[in-house]
Every structure is written in C-alpha cells, then in structure tokens.
Length: 264
Image 1 (cartoon, one colour):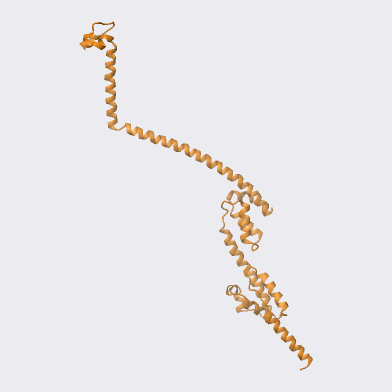
Image 2 (cartoon, helix red, strand yellow):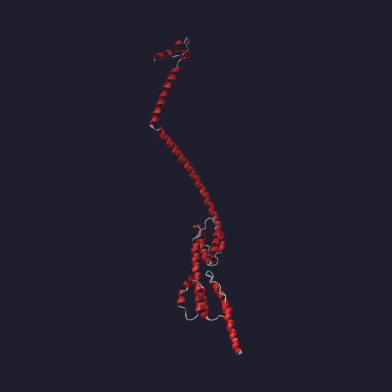
C-alpha cells in the first residue's frame, strides 16, 4: 500500500468516524430555527457538505407531526437545494402554526380581578417570544373592559408598558366609581324594601279590620260605649247622696235631678 493510498484510507476512516460520532439533537418544534443552527454546527464538525446528506439527516430526525407540515417536500422534493427548501419550510410553517396555537390560547384568557398591567405580564409569560409585540398588544387590548379599550385606542404609538401603567390608573378610578355607585344602589334598595314591607303590613291590617267578625265587634263596642256614656251623663246630674244611697238618701244638694231620673 502506497503512502497516498494510506492517507486516503486514513481520511476515509476519519470521515466515517466523524459521521458516526455526529450528534443531532432532538427536533425542537418550539424553536425550529435554533435546532437548525445546532444541526449545522454538527454538519461542520462532521464535514458534511452534500445537500442530499443534509436533507436525509433532517428527514431522519423529525417526527410524524412535523413531517405532515412538509409533506409536499417529502413526497416531491426539489431537484436542487433540498436541504435549504426543507429548512425554510419547517421554520416558516411551524412558526406560523405555533403562533396560531398561542393566539388561540391567549384569546381564552380573562383579566379577572387582575390589574391591566398584571394581565399583560400574564400574557407575556404564556406567549414567551413566540408572537410579536404588536399581536400581544392586540390580544391584551381585546381582553380589557370596553371603556378601557376606548380610552387606550389613541395610544398605539406609545410603549406597551406605558400604556399598561395608564390602564392601571384608569382601571383604579373606574373601580372606585363602580363601588360607590353599587353602595348607593344598595342603600336605595334597602329603603325601598322597608317601604314595601310597611305597605304590606298596613294592607294586612286593613284586611283584618275589614272582616265581618271585626265589624260586628266594633259595633258592639260602639253600642256599649254609647250606653255607658248615657249612664255616666245621667249620673252626672244627680248629687252625691242620691248617687250613693239612692232612695234612702236623707240629704240632697242642688242641683239634683234624682227624681227626674227615677221618672225616666
């Protein structure tokens, strides 16, 4: 074996060893662009330059879910630039799909009892860096109370953090006004309830007094009071002695109508 053959064999073995030692990380659906950057670092270490080889590495390291996104490039790959075509398609299509998923997630989030700025930070934590700030602003604004949306709509050119701070101040004032209005409404309702209850009691009393038994009792009491009044009136015209001793009285003080009372 010549020296040149030995060198070629040695280079071939070294190339084969590098290929075997190539470590391709698992595919990152959330960060396809970063995954390709790591993959290309491995290609450099392994001295892999062939377009078809790079293309084959990508196909062998993606899962069924990602493969469906580039089905057209797998079933009918281009004759040239296969690797660049599949790389571009995966980054673009998976990023768009992820943005749609995050948007759907954020659209179901509610502000609840959080301040507007707290709600914004909550959405930022959910979205991470997967969506643009403009889209995040749109989603955040769309979940705020309608009165806040109307006020903040004129501040599109301002920083999102500044808009969130102003939203906090407006929200605080609005909440205080709502609380006061609610307390006044509760007070008015309480007074109205008391008046309604009083009217019910008066109505029940009126119904009770209007019953037939009650009317007869009232007449009897009226007659009794009338007879008693007449008796008291007659006794008022009789002197003390005749009132006490009647016919047996031995004295009489005038005026005294005892005899007339007897005649009646």
